Amino acid sequence: MSRPLPLHLAVGLNGAGWHPAAWRAPTARPADLFTAGYWLDLVREAERGLLDLVTIEDALGLQSSRDGGPDERTDQVRGRLDAVLIAARTAPLTRRVGLMPTATVTHTEPFHIAKAIATLDHVSGGRAGWQVQVSGLPHEAAHFGRRVLGTGPQAAQDLRGEAADHVEVVRRLWDSWEDNAEIRDVATGRFIDRDKLHYVDFTGRWFSVKGPSITPRPPQGRPPVGAPAPGGLAYGVGADVVFAAPHDADDVRDVVGAGRAPHVFGDLLVVLDEDARTARDHRQRLDDLDGSGHGTSAASFAGTPSQLADQILQWRAAGLTGIRLLPARLPADLRAITRGLVPELQAYGAFRRQYEATTLRGHLGLARPANRYAEDSVA
Figure (cartoon, rainbow, N blue to C red):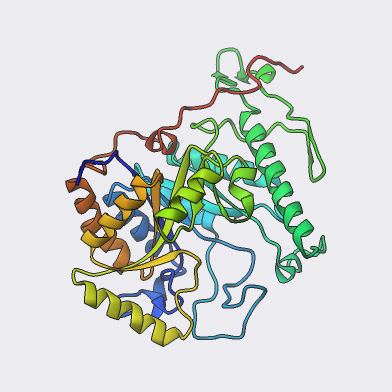
């Protein structure tokens, strides 16, 4: 096989794993799901494997086996910690891996997300990202009581439009401090240069935001934004990283051709073992326990790390710049990725043998953006 260009690898972290029955696997840690140590162990393992980034799932409602609202099941994991706070907790205790928590834009103010992700970028030394998500579910809207969501195509379009404005406001707020706005001159008593803080003055259908932010510009300038491809959300918000769910090489080519973004990652749920038949048995056992399959639109793979490497390289050849692996079982399948898959990809010359950058933008090969307000000033 010819030596492919290097690719980017991410892992999606979600509770006990992406399979609804993962918490019942022999290697699971269900008693630790709501502890800081559990999440720190996972992120450190991802960093051990030299992965570009981890995404951390979150939502405004409890997990459910139904698409449209809560269910009555008691045999699946319910409840989660806040993804941004998980990332902030793990940031000082890791060094290189990117941290991209989910933050839902619907029902959430851009000002709050802007300062939360900027703070994460500061405390991580430039490793923050943001996975954008929308919420169109009535029971989630009821948690806030400020709006009634519509239904149908127009409502979905409105959610996407609101998300696009939200991301634009957040990026402007990140730019509202110039990079050298902080003087910190004890002798003159000047901490900031007020002329280098800028009003964003955004007015649109969904938001009217004056600014500036209360948090200095993030070390990356603008942390990378990730979003799912379905429904046009990713391209609508101008995502730096698009997460798609292809099922074969033809799907990959369709997704890559659907819009322009610096990176398109393919999602793949994985069950891994040194023996392919054993991996398939693990998946079947989980399916039998739950009775409803793996619960995600991503393609499912069960096999060896070597077989997975072959599939990843095929998808890479079809146009993907990266893969986001969704471990069916945590921590078992994450360890199989970092200790089994990564060496296979390294043997092909397809993945790094050491980190070459210190920031998430650096891992992804994205230049640090110039500040849009640097030529302006305010009184």
